[in-house]
Amino acid sequence: MTSPLFDQWRARSPYYDESHEAVCDTVRRFVEREILPNVDAWEAAGELPRSLHKKAAEAGILGLGYPAEFGGTGSNGFDIFHSLVQSEEMCRPGAGGIPASLMTHGIGLPPILAMGSEEMKQRIAPAVLAGGKSISLGVTEPAGGADVANLKTKAERKGASYIVNGSKTYITSGMRADYVTTAVRTGGPGMGGVSLLLIETDRPGFSRTPLAKMGWHASDTATLHFDNVEVPAENLIGPENGGFMGIMRNFNGERLGMAQQAAAYARVCFEDALDWAQQREVFGKPLIRNQAIRHKLADMLRQINSTQAWIDQCAWSVREGKAFPGDFALLKVQATRTMEFCAREACQILGGASFMRGCRVERIYREVRVMAIGGGSEEIMFDLASRQYNF
Image 1: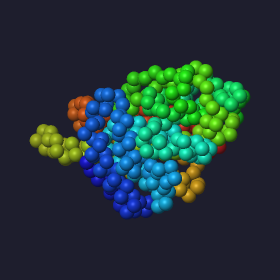
Image 2: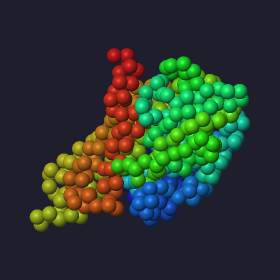
Image 3: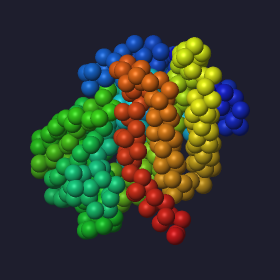
Image 4: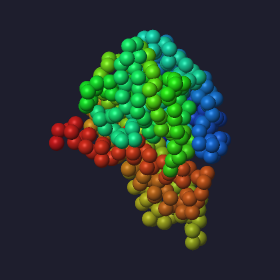
């Protein structure tokens, strides 16, 4: 499996060096060995085997950039661009449910590392980064998604515990998560009454229901139910009623990661469409010799490269401590629209082949909608950005 387009991009970019190439090689070999032969089977099963998490941990993938004291690779010599390279390679199979499920800890664990007690970090992080335990993030509710300030799931303090009632839905890896980093209401209305609580899924009163989806077939998704679930007070992540900003900070990283994934899927579509156009003969000549086809490919490349430049700029802003939330909101829209455009154009070039199961373009076209919705729909992103830019 090759990825010449992104290899060429990195070679011409000031943000990537030999260390990023080393990450690329490691993840690419892992994907070729452990994932590619099994994509169709996992898509049909609707989930990944738990053993894949341990294999990914052993390969240094789960712990890339996480603190060494918890079993990660450490931050020495690691920057956010290594993470972008890893995301790129995990998307090469064109099956969005695989990185979504395998890397769910990327949204569930950071709040604990940023805001949790030292005891909680030591209790949770090593097992997750070793692939022995799975952690999800529980924010979205049946009555609302990105409107976190108005969430309804309630955690009432009683003695040394919180009693949790409510539900979460569309939770990635929710069916097999051992822990859920859960947004709950511990105070009054609005953002000032929101907290984060770590909830173990084996607690009495917790249950979950699987959800069938348009895409991300290899990733299980669930509705979570909390019926008087008793959670010890030491499972509070950060201060009580201080969870909203932690959730918002987490969204920036999630949106940057999704933008990189969307760009990666767009590149896969371009590469498969180019390969098909070069090999397919139509009316006695290769398809690529038709000007209309070359224009389609050039337009795809225009959007991919401009999107990647913005991704790298936003990643640089994170590295330099200059991140601006409005940029990430608009970037996610740009990247997912680029993905949708390239998936559609690739389908036009591949024709009927793009409609067949087992084709990367077919899988990617199914993932378009969840990528555009996850982390906040376009309308929410535009509204967030307009408020951030103060217009």
